[in-house]
Image 1: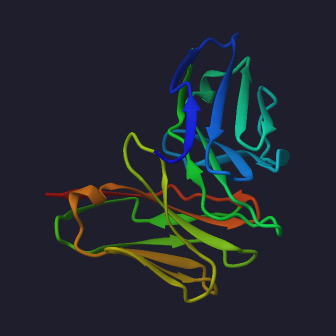
Image 2: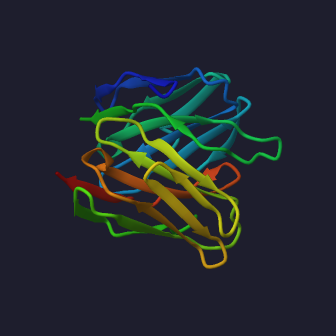
Length: 116
Length: 110
């Protein structure tokens, strides 16, 4: 148990569906992250939120839409996805200093997404 | 985008053997180097965070060193045990950006 939970753990969706992934951290951290893990590829950072503000968006297609209503919750809204978006989506949180430098990240268990 | 390379990609060792892996990354514009262990069906778990050139961290049988001037870090496991079987990831970070390598997959054979 890392203090970061994700739901659902598995998701199968059609290309025309809309779904959301949820992440919650119980560690009192001030930064949250979405990562994508595709087969044979490194973890790819998608989005970063510091103090509920999005600070990084690493050229992610608009069919992925993040939302961070407070420092403990993070969502990833999905719509009109493509089969190549099938992957493991990991959420993480960390403490970030006043100088915006991050300490170690704590990861959730991930959501295994399959787009059919 | 930082190019992070880890070697070897995979490794099989006998229980009791000691082993080490390498993480290479561009040495400029660098804040910290993170090591994570990722066991199958679990979440990645932070092992070490190192920031200073020459840093050496240790946790039980696992230790790591950092050379920021030449851009590499080593992870050592002494007396490998089956429970050490996992993928070991390194990630230099600058500010909010983390750049993960593809990892070294370690299998310890009992």
